[in-house]
Amino acid sequence: MTTVEPAVLTDVPGWFWELDRHLFEWVLDRQSRTGTRGDLLELGAYLGRSAIVMGRHLAEGETLTVCDLFESEAPDEENAAEMARFYRETLSRAAFEANYLAFHDHLPQIVQGPTSSLADGRIPAGSCRFVHVDASYLYEHVAGDIRTARAVLQPQGVLVMDDYRSAHTPGVAAATWEAVLNHGLRPICLSECKFYATWGDPEPYQRELLATSGGAPGCGTSTDTVAGHRVLRLDGRPTPAFPVSRHHDRLAQQHRLAAAERAATELAARRAAAAAARRPGAVARQVAADLLPPLLSDALRQVGRQAERRAGRRG
Ligand SMILES: C[S@@+](CC[C@H](N)C(=O)[O-])C[C@H]1O[C@@H](n2cnc3c(N)ncnc32)[C@H](O)[C@@H]1O
Image (tube, rainbow, N blue to C red):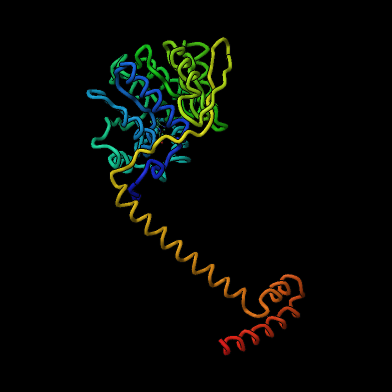
């Protein structure tokens, strides 16, 4: 697969939209502001779009680990079918690495394999402040990923679940709400695509989000109660600044040249169309072509062409 150099984050393919990018940055910044230290973990990295944002928030001594199958075999048939349907054509570890290195000096720690391999305790218990679960959509896998997240998160750490309510991901919905209803997970807030929660106290996060209307201009909040849990719903399209890749200046110059060429071509086409419209009989010929029976309009077209030739000889 050809790797296209990304100039800005949105050049990296993926499913990570503005509101969630803002919420990732907000949670991670808030943790830094309040002196919370710890590692970051992502299950399901694809081509790096969310990992690149997480990597921007590493403080000295902290580690980002990403776990993805990339080109490896899926551990079961259903997971293999999911991989074939959504990712196989576009995904490679090399492409992930190239994208990540366009924005950062060093790669994260990469575990290539199923997320179930993390259940062996290789990520130390209680070492993480932030975990993003965005790998398989199958219930059994997601339930396992949530157990791993619980083991590695600090008490006040934040878990983000992707696709907790999409039409094609009922297994994620089931595993996420099961963790809330049966295993002590407490919701902080919901966006359209992601579920933010903690096994600690969600109140300080919620208080600040409510006080700042979601933490950014363009955001809105509303409140629900679900089985006794307060849940904030966030909406809007904040416009956080995009991280810019190290290829940005060179590619930006190429993009500017390409845009200038496109504009020149369009201008030439518009001028040619305007000149054609000014030729004698142009409007009448178009009306005739639209309305008259074919034989009659062919005859009129011939008359028009003769008139054009005469006009051409004059010009
Ligand atoms: C939705 S994509 C991740 C998107 C990425 N977080 C982003 O924002 O761009 C899901 C990823 O999970 C990986 N995946 C699926 N099943 C997996 C499994 N059992 N173990 C590890 N990774 C898996 C796929 O290879 C794919 O890259």
